[in-house]
Length: 461
Image (tube, rainbow, N blue to C red; front, side, top):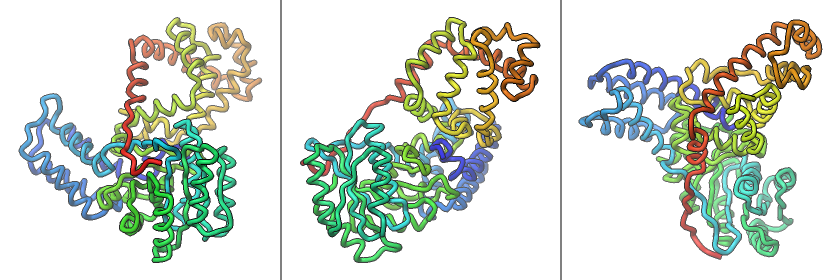
Protein backbone atom coordinates (compact mmCIF):
# COMPACT_ATOMS: atom_id res chain seq x y z
CA UNK A 1 0.00 0.00 0.00
CA UNK A 2 1.38 3.38 -0.91
CA UNK A 3 2.39 5.80 1.80
CA UNK A 4 -0.04 8.35 0.48
CA UNK A 5 -2.92 6.21 1.72
CA UNK A 6 -1.61 6.47 5.26
CA UNK A 7 -4.21 8.95 6.47
CA UNK A 8 -7.12 7.29 4.73
CA UNK A 9 -6.28 4.08 6.60
CA UNK A 10 -5.09 5.23 10.01
CA UNK A 11 -6.67 8.64 10.44
CA UNK A 12 -9.77 8.44 8.24
CA UNK A 13 -12.25 8.70 11.10
CA UNK A 14 -10.30 11.49 12.81
CA UNK A 15 -9.96 13.42 9.55
CA UNK A 16 -13.70 13.15 8.92
CA UNK A 17 -14.47 14.41 12.43
CA UNK A 18 -12.15 17.40 12.06
CA UNK A 19 -13.59 18.11 8.62
CA UNK A 20 -17.11 18.30 10.07
CA UNK A 21 -16.01 20.51 12.99
CA UNK A 22 -14.10 22.96 10.82
CA UNK A 23 -16.82 23.11 8.16
CA UNK A 24 -19.23 24.46 10.75
CA UNK A 25 -16.69 26.97 12.06
CA UNK A 26 -15.75 28.29 8.63
CA UNK A 27 -19.35 29.18 7.89
CA UNK A 28 -19.62 31.65 10.78
CA UNK A 29 -18.70 35.31 10.62
CA UNK A 30 -17.67 35.41 14.27
CA UNK A 31 -17.17 32.86 17.02
CA UNK A 32 -18.53 33.19 20.52
CA UNK A 33 -16.87 31.60 23.54
CA UNK A 34 -19.65 29.01 23.46
CA UNK A 35 -18.78 28.17 19.84
CA UNK A 36 -15.15 27.63 20.80
CA UNK A 37 -16.08 25.50 23.82
CA UNK A 38 -18.33 23.33 21.67
CA UNK A 39 -15.60 22.87 19.04
CA UNK A 40 -13.03 21.96 21.70
CA UNK A 41 -15.38 19.38 23.24
CA UNK A 42 -15.81 17.77 19.83
CA UNK A 43 -12.05 17.83 19.20
CA UNK A 44 -11.44 16.22 22.60
CA UNK A 45 -13.96 13.46 21.87
CA UNK A 46 -12.52 12.87 18.39
CA UNK A 47 -9.00 12.46 19.80
CA UNK A 48 -10.14 10.11 22.56
CA UNK A 49 -12.00 7.96 20.04
CA UNK A 50 -8.78 7.83 18.00
CA UNK A 51 -7.15 6.19 21.06
CA UNK A 52 -4.93 9.16 21.88
CA UNK A 53 -3.45 9.17 25.38
CA UNK A 54 -5.76 10.94 27.87
CA UNK A 55 -3.04 13.25 29.18
CA UNK A 56 -2.03 14.16 25.63
CA UNK A 57 -5.65 15.00 24.77
CA UNK A 58 -6.07 17.12 27.90
CA UNK A 59 -2.85 19.05 27.26
CA UNK A 60 -3.63 19.47 23.56
CA UNK A 61 -7.10 20.91 24.16
CA UNK A 62 -5.75 23.11 26.95
CA UNK A 63 -3.08 24.62 24.72
CA UNK A 64 -5.58 25.22 21.90
CA UNK A 65 -7.93 26.97 24.34
CA UNK A 66 -5.09 29.08 25.73
CA UNK A 67 -3.99 30.10 22.23
CA UNK A 68 -7.52 31.15 21.31
CA UNK A 69 -8.60 32.97 24.47
CA UNK A 70 -7.80 36.66 24.46
CA UNK A 71 -5.88 36.53 21.18
CA UNK A 72 -6.59 39.13 18.52
CA UNK A 73 -7.69 37.31 15.42
CA UNK A 74 -5.44 37.67 12.40
CA UNK A 75 -6.73 40.21 9.92
CA UNK A 76 -6.01 37.80 7.08
CA UNK A 77 -8.00 34.95 8.62
CA UNK A 78 -11.63 34.52 9.52
CA UNK A 79 -12.38 33.37 13.09
CA UNK A 80 -13.04 29.86 11.84
CA UNK A 81 -9.76 29.80 9.92
CA UNK A 82 -7.94 31.03 13.02
CA UNK A 83 -9.19 28.02 14.98
CA UNK A 84 -8.05 25.72 12.18
CA UNK A 85 -4.61 27.35 12.21
CA UNK A 86 -4.21 26.97 15.98
CA UNK A 87 -5.34 23.33 15.88
CA UNK A 88 -2.96 22.66 12.98
CA UNK A 89 0.01 24.20 14.82
CA UNK A 90 -0.70 22.20 17.97
CA UNK A 91 -1.27 19.02 15.96
CA UNK A 92 2.15 19.51 14.37
CA UNK A 93 3.71 19.85 17.82
CA UNK A 94 2.23 16.67 19.30
CA UNK A 95 3.36 14.80 16.20
CA UNK A 96 6.95 15.87 16.83
CA UNK A 97 7.35 19.48 15.79
CA UNK A 98 10.21 19.41 13.29
CA UNK A 99 11.34 16.55 11.08
CA UNK A 100 14.38 14.79 12.57
CA UNK A 101 17.23 15.26 10.10
CA UNK A 102 19.80 12.51 10.33
CA UNK A 103 23.45 13.42 10.50
CA UNK A 104 26.39 11.19 9.60
CA UNK A 105 29.52 10.28 11.55
CA UNK A 106 32.72 12.09 10.60
CA UNK A 107 34.39 8.68 10.72
CA UNK A 108 32.05 6.07 9.17
CA UNK A 109 30.05 4.03 9.71
CA UNK A 110 27.06 5.81 11.19
CA UNK A 111 25.58 3.17 13.50
CA UNK A 112 21.84 2.71 13.96
CA UNK A 113 20.51 0.29 16.55
CA UNK A 114 16.94 -1.02 16.27
CA UNK A 115 15.08 -2.37 19.29
CA UNK A 116 11.52 -3.52 19.87
CA UNK A 117 9.20 -6.33 20.83
CA UNK A 118 8.78 -9.48 18.78
CA UNK A 119 6.11 -9.05 16.14
CA UNK A 120 6.57 -5.30 15.79
CA UNK A 121 8.05 -5.68 12.30
CA UNK A 122 11.57 -4.87 13.47
CA UNK A 123 13.50 -7.10 11.05
CA UNK A 124 11.54 -5.86 8.06
CA UNK A 125 11.98 -2.27 9.28
CA UNK A 126 15.75 -2.82 9.48
CA UNK A 127 15.86 -3.89 5.83
CA UNK A 128 13.58 -1.01 4.79
CA UNK A 129 15.76 1.47 6.66
CA UNK A 130 18.91 0.17 4.96
CA UNK A 131 17.13 0.30 1.61
CA UNK A 132 16.06 3.91 2.32
CA UNK A 133 19.65 4.94 3.05
CA UNK A 134 20.80 3.35 -0.19
CA UNK A 135 17.95 4.55 -2.38
CA UNK A 136 17.26 8.03 -1.02
CA UNK A 137 20.56 9.06 0.56
CA UNK A 138 23.02 7.34 -1.79
CA UNK A 139 24.71 5.53 1.11
CA UNK A 140 26.34 2.09 1.27
CA UNK A 141 24.73 0.35 4.26
CA UNK A 142 25.44 -2.97 5.93
CA UNK A 143 22.82 -4.94 7.85
CA UNK A 144 23.70 -6.90 10.98
CA UNK A 145 21.50 -9.77 12.11
CA UNK A 146 21.89 -9.80 15.89
CA UNK A 147 18.45 -11.31 16.47
CA UNK A 148 19.59 -14.82 17.34
CA UNK A 149 16.55 -15.49 19.53
CA UNK A 150 13.84 -15.91 16.90
CA UNK A 151 14.22 -18.87 14.52
CA UNK A 152 14.89 -17.83 10.91
CA UNK A 153 15.22 -14.13 11.82
CA UNK A 154 18.69 -13.91 10.28
CA UNK A 155 17.55 -15.78 7.18
CA UNK A 156 14.60 -13.39 6.82
CA UNK A 157 17.02 -10.48 7.03
CA UNK A 158 19.28 -12.05 4.40
CA UNK A 159 16.36 -12.47 1.98
CA UNK A 160 15.26 -8.88 2.50
CA UNK A 161 18.83 -7.63 2.24
CA UNK A 162 19.24 -9.43 -1.08
CA UNK A 163 16.06 -7.77 -2.38
CA UNK A 164 17.39 -4.37 -1.28
CA UNK A 165 20.88 -5.00 -2.61
CA UNK A 166 22.34 -4.62 0.89
CA UNK A 167 24.78 -7.21 2.36
CA UNK A 168 24.00 -8.84 5.71
CA UNK A 169 26.49 -9.89 8.39
CA UNK A 170 25.72 -12.47 11.07
CA UNK A 171 27.16 -15.62 12.61
CA UNK A 172 26.11 -18.30 15.12
CA UNK A 173 27.47 -16.60 18.22
CA UNK A 174 26.05 -14.33 20.91
CA UNK A 175 24.27 -11.08 19.96
CA UNK A 176 26.86 -8.74 21.50
CA UNK A 177 29.70 -10.44 19.64
CA UNK A 178 27.76 -10.40 16.37
CA UNK A 179 27.07 -6.66 16.74
CA UNK A 180 30.74 -5.91 17.49
CA UNK A 181 31.99 -8.01 14.59
CA UNK A 182 29.38 -6.45 12.34
CA UNK A 183 30.80 -3.02 13.16
CA UNK A 184 34.32 -4.26 12.39
CA UNK A 185 33.05 -5.72 9.09
CA UNK A 186 31.47 -2.40 8.11
CA UNK A 187 34.79 -0.64 8.69
CA UNK A 188 36.66 -3.30 6.72
CA UNK A 189 34.29 -3.09 3.77
CA UNK A 190 34.09 0.71 3.82
CA UNK A 191 30.35 0.72 4.53
CA UNK A 192 29.18 4.11 5.76
CA UNK A 193 25.91 3.10 7.47
CA UNK A 194 25.39 0.16 9.82
CA UNK A 195 21.86 -1.00 10.74
CA UNK A 196 21.70 -3.53 13.59
CA UNK A 197 18.62 -5.71 14.08
CA UNK A 198 18.29 -6.98 17.66
CA UNK A 199 16.15 -9.65 19.26
CA UNK A 200 12.69 -9.03 20.65
CA UNK A 201 10.41 -10.78 23.10
CA UNK A 202 6.66 -11.20 23.25
CA UNK A 203 6.74 -8.88 26.25
CA UNK A 204 9.25 -6.71 28.05
CA UNK A 205 11.51 -8.64 30.41
CA UNK A 206 14.85 -8.16 32.17
CA UNK A 207 16.72 -10.50 29.80
CA UNK A 208 15.63 -8.55 26.72
CA UNK A 209 16.58 -5.21 28.23
CA UNK A 210 19.95 -6.45 29.43
CA UNK A 211 20.84 -7.87 26.01
CA UNK A 212 19.97 -4.73 24.07
CA UNK A 213 21.69 -2.56 26.70
CA UNK A 214 24.94 -4.54 26.33
CA UNK A 215 24.79 -4.29 22.55
CA UNK A 216 24.29 -0.54 22.83
CA UNK A 217 27.24 -0.16 25.18
CA UNK A 218 29.44 -2.19 22.82
CA UNK A 219 28.70 -0.49 19.48
CA UNK A 220 27.84 3.00 20.84
CA UNK A 221 25.19 3.78 18.22
CA UNK A 222 24.75 7.25 16.81
CA UNK A 223 20.99 6.61 16.71
CA UNK A 224 18.81 4.20 18.66
CA UNK A 225 15.36 3.71 17.19
CA UNK A 226 12.49 1.82 18.79
CA UNK A 227 10.25 -0.06 16.37
CA UNK A 228 6.63 -0.09 17.54
CA UNK A 229 3.49 -1.52 15.99
CA UNK A 230 0.82 1.12 15.34
CA UNK A 231 -1.86 -1.57 15.63
CA UNK A 232 -1.19 -1.95 19.36
CA UNK A 233 -2.41 1.57 20.16
CA UNK A 234 -1.63 2.75 23.69
CA UNK A 235 0.33 -0.44 24.39
CA UNK A 236 2.87 0.85 21.86
CA UNK A 237 3.31 4.02 23.91
CA UNK A 238 3.78 2.00 27.11
CA UNK A 239 6.39 -0.10 25.32
CA UNK A 240 8.23 3.03 24.23
CA UNK A 241 8.29 4.32 27.81
CA UNK A 242 9.76 1.04 29.08
CA UNK A 243 12.50 0.91 26.44
CA UNK A 244 13.36 4.56 26.95
CA UNK A 245 14.10 3.86 30.62
CA UNK A 246 16.81 1.40 29.49
CA UNK A 247 18.03 2.95 26.24
CA UNK A 248 18.59 6.55 25.30
CA UNK A 249 16.14 6.49 22.41
CA UNK A 250 16.50 9.00 19.60
CA UNK A 251 13.21 8.26 17.93
CA UNK A 252 10.54 5.80 16.90
CA UNK A 253 9.87 3.84 13.73
CA UNK A 254 6.13 3.24 13.45
CA UNK A 255 5.09 0.10 11.53
CA UNK A 256 1.84 -1.30 10.16
CA UNK A 257 0.20 2.10 9.77
CA UNK A 258 -1.47 0.77 6.62
CA UNK A 259 -3.75 -1.31 8.85
CA UNK A 260 -6.88 -0.27 10.74
CA UNK A 261 -5.09 1.40 13.65
CA UNK A 262 -6.87 4.54 14.85
CA UNK A 263 -3.72 6.67 15.11
CA UNK A 264 -3.44 6.92 18.90
CA UNK A 265 0.17 5.75 19.00
CA UNK A 266 1.29 8.27 16.37
CA UNK A 267 -0.43 11.12 18.19
CA UNK A 268 0.76 10.14 21.67
CA UNK A 269 4.32 8.85 21.54
CA UNK A 270 6.14 12.20 21.20
CA UNK A 271 4.24 13.84 24.05
CA UNK A 272 4.54 10.83 26.38
CA UNK A 273 8.10 9.66 25.64
CA UNK A 274 9.63 12.90 24.44
CA UNK A 275 11.05 11.29 21.30
CA UNK A 276 9.67 11.83 17.79
CA UNK A 277 8.51 9.42 15.12
CA UNK A 278 11.36 9.36 12.61
CA UNK A 279 10.15 6.88 10.00
CA UNK A 280 6.86 5.23 9.11
CA UNK A 281 6.52 1.81 7.49
CA UNK A 282 3.50 2.09 5.23
CA UNK A 283 3.19 -1.27 3.50
CA UNK A 284 4.78 -4.61 2.78
CA UNK A 285 7.20 -3.59 0.02
CA UNK A 286 10.73 -2.38 0.78
CA UNK A 287 9.90 0.99 -0.76
CA UNK A 288 6.86 1.46 1.51
CA UNK A 289 8.93 3.38 4.02
CA UNK A 290 9.23 7.13 4.46
CA UNK A 291 10.52 9.82 6.74
CA UNK A 292 7.91 11.13 9.13
CA UNK A 293 7.17 14.84 8.64
CA UNK A 294 4.98 16.22 11.47
CA UNK A 295 3.87 19.29 9.50
CA UNK A 296 2.84 17.23 6.48
CA UNK A 297 1.07 14.70 8.67
CA UNK A 298 -0.85 17.48 10.39
CA UNK A 299 -1.86 18.75 6.94
CA UNK A 300 -3.14 15.31 5.96
CA UNK A 301 -5.02 14.72 9.19
CA UNK A 302 -6.79 18.05 8.84
CA UNK A 303 -7.67 17.36 5.21
CA UNK A 304 -5.25 19.90 3.74
CA UNK A 305 -3.46 17.53 1.39
CA UNK A 306 0.30 17.01 1.14
CA UNK A 307 1.78 18.73 -1.89
CA UNK A 308 5.42 18.35 -0.81
CA UNK A 309 5.24 14.57 -0.47
CA UNK A 310 3.45 14.41 -3.81
CA UNK A 311 6.30 16.38 -5.39
CA UNK A 312 8.91 14.15 -3.76
CA UNK A 313 7.17 11.02 -5.02
CA UNK A 314 7.12 12.51 -8.51
CA UNK A 315 10.81 13.37 -8.32
CA UNK A 316 11.63 9.85 -7.12
CA UNK A 317 9.55 7.94 -9.67
CA UNK A 318 9.16 10.10 -12.77
CA UNK A 319 11.73 10.52 -15.51
CA UNK A 320 12.69 14.20 -15.29
CA UNK A 321 13.95 14.40 -18.86
CA UNK A 322 10.73 12.94 -20.25
CA UNK A 323 8.62 15.19 -18.00
CA UNK A 324 10.47 18.32 -19.10
CA UNK A 325 10.17 17.35 -22.75
CA UNK A 326 6.43 16.75 -22.29
CA UNK A 327 6.07 20.15 -20.58
CA UNK A 328 7.88 21.86 -23.46
CA UNK A 329 5.56 20.23 -25.97
CA UNK A 330 2.56 21.14 -23.83
CA UNK A 331 3.57 24.80 -23.67
CA UNK A 332 3.98 24.79 -27.43
CA UNK A 333 0.52 23.33 -27.85
CA UNK A 334 1.76 19.92 -29.03
CA UNK A 335 0.79 17.64 -26.12
CA UNK A 336 -0.45 14.43 -27.75
CA UNK A 337 -2.04 11.14 -26.80
CA UNK A 338 1.44 9.61 -27.08
CA UNK A 339 2.63 12.03 -24.41
CA UNK A 340 -0.48 11.31 -22.34
CA UNK A 341 0.15 7.56 -22.46
CA UNK A 342 3.79 8.06 -21.48
CA UNK A 343 2.90 10.29 -18.53
CA UNK A 344 0.12 7.95 -17.38
CA UNK A 345 2.52 5.01 -17.32
CA UNK A 346 4.97 7.04 -15.25
CA UNK A 347 2.29 8.14 -12.78
CA UNK A 348 1.41 4.49 -12.17
CA UNK A 349 4.91 4.05 -10.72
CA UNK A 350 4.04 6.47 -7.92
CA UNK A 351 1.47 4.17 -6.36
CA UNK A 352 -2.32 3.76 -6.23
CA UNK A 353 -4.23 6.70 -7.66
CA UNK A 354 -6.53 6.92 -4.64
CA UNK A 355 -3.49 7.67 -2.49
CA UNK A 356 -2.18 10.33 -4.84
CA UNK A 357 -5.58 12.03 -4.97
CA UNK A 358 -5.58 12.21 -1.17
CA UNK A 359 -2.46 14.40 -1.30
CA UNK A 360 -4.08 17.09 -3.43
CA UNK A 361 -5.21 19.99 -1.22
CA UNK A 362 -8.68 21.47 -1.38
CA UNK A 363 -10.54 18.38 -2.55
CA UNK A 364 -13.94 17.58 -1.02
CA UNK A 365 -14.02 14.72 1.47
CA UNK A 366 -16.03 12.58 -0.95
CA UNK A 367 -13.32 12.87 -3.61
CA UNK A 368 -10.44 12.57 -1.13
CA UNK A 369 -11.78 9.32 0.34
CA UNK A 370 -13.03 7.85 -2.93
CA UNK A 371 -11.77 4.42 -3.91
CA UNK A 372 -10.23 4.83 -7.35
CA UNK A 373 -9.75 1.55 -9.20
CA UNK A 374 -6.34 1.57 -10.90
CA UNK A 375 -7.58 -1.13 -13.29
CA UNK A 376 -9.65 1.54 -15.01
CA UNK A 377 -6.43 2.77 -16.59
CA UNK A 378 -6.13 -0.52 -18.51
CA UNK A 379 -8.83 0.23 -21.11
CA UNK A 380 -7.41 3.72 -21.64
CA UNK A 381 -3.98 2.29 -22.40
CA UNK A 382 -5.54 -0.33 -24.69
CA UNK A 383 -7.45 2.34 -26.64
CA UNK A 384 -4.34 4.47 -27.19
CA UNK A 385 -2.25 1.40 -28.15
CA UNK A 386 -4.89 0.56 -30.78
CA UNK A 387 -4.37 3.90 -32.51
CA UNK A 388 -1.93 4.55 -35.32
CA UNK A 389 1.01 6.92 -34.68
CA UNK A 390 -0.76 9.59 -36.75
CA UNK A 391 -3.93 9.23 -34.67
CA UNK A 392 -2.02 9.61 -31.43
CA UNK A 393 -0.28 12.72 -32.72
CA UNK A 394 -3.43 14.27 -34.14
CA UNK A 395 -6.65 12.92 -32.54
CA UNK A 396 -8.75 15.29 -34.64
CA UNK A 397 -8.40 12.92 -37.64
CA UNK A 398 -10.18 10.11 -35.78
CA UNK A 399 -13.55 9.89 -37.53
CA UNK A 400 -16.40 7.43 -37.02
CA UNK A 401 -14.84 4.49 -38.88
CA UNK A 402 -11.52 4.96 -37.10
CA UNK A 403 -13.27 5.03 -33.73
CA UNK A 404 -14.99 1.75 -34.54
CA UNK A 405 -11.67 0.16 -35.55
CA UNK A 406 -9.96 1.41 -32.38
CA UNK A 407 -12.79 0.11 -30.19
CA UNK A 408 -12.62 -3.35 -31.78
CA UNK A 409 -8.83 -3.44 -31.52
CA UNK A 410 -8.85 -2.48 -27.84
CA UNK A 411 -11.78 -4.64 -26.75
CA UNK A 412 -13.79 -1.58 -25.76
CA UNK A 413 -16.80 0.30 -27.13
CA UNK A 414 -17.01 3.36 -29.34
CA UNK A 415 -18.61 5.16 -26.39
CA UNK A 416 -15.46 4.56 -24.32
CA UNK A 417 -13.30 5.77 -27.21
CA UNK A 418 -15.43 8.90 -27.56
CA UNK A 419 -15.25 9.56 -23.83
CA UNK A 420 -11.46 9.28 -23.82
CA UNK A 421 -11.09 11.65 -26.77
CA UNK A 422 -13.47 14.20 -25.24
CA UNK A 423 -11.73 14.13 -21.87
CA UNK A 424 -8.30 14.33 -23.48
CA UNK A 425 -9.37 17.46 -25.35
CA UNK A 426 -10.60 19.03 -22.10
CA UNK A 427 -7.41 18.00 -20.33
CA UNK A 428 -5.28 19.58 -23.07
CA UNK A 429 -7.03 22.89 -22.56
CA UNK A 430 -6.69 22.74 -18.78
CA UNK A 431 -3.02 21.71 -18.84
CA UNK A 432 -2.15 24.52 -21.24
CA UNK A 433 -3.66 26.94 -18.73
CA UNK A 434 -1.65 25.41 -15.86
CA UNK A 435 1.58 25.37 -17.87
CA UNK A 436 1.12 29.08 -18.62
CA UNK A 437 1.42 29.98 -14.91
CA UNK A 438 5.00 31.33 -14.69
CA UNK A 439 7.37 29.59 -12.29
CA UNK A 440 4.73 27.36 -10.68
CA UNK A 441 6.64 24.08 -10.99
CA UNK A 442 10.00 25.63 -10.15
CA UNK A 443 8.80 27.22 -6.91
CA UNK A 444 7.21 23.99 -5.70
CA UNK A 445 10.29 21.91 -6.57
CA UNK A 446 12.59 24.32 -4.71
CA UNK A 447 10.32 24.18 -1.67
CA UNK A 448 10.30 20.40 -1.78
CA UNK A 449 14.11 20.30 -1.85
CA UNK A 450 14.23 22.41 1.32
CA UNK A 451 17.22 22.67 3.61
CA UNK A 452 18.80 19.87 5.58
CA UNK A 453 19.81 20.21 9.17
CA UNK A 454 22.24 17.80 10.71
CA UNK A 455 21.68 16.35 14.12
CA UNK A 456 24.57 16.57 16.51
CA UNK A 457 26.20 13.17 16.76
CA UNK A 458 26.62 11.33 20.00
CA UNK A 459 30.13 10.25 19.15
CA UNK A 460 32.66 10.21 16.35
CA UNK A 461 34.53 7.23 15.15
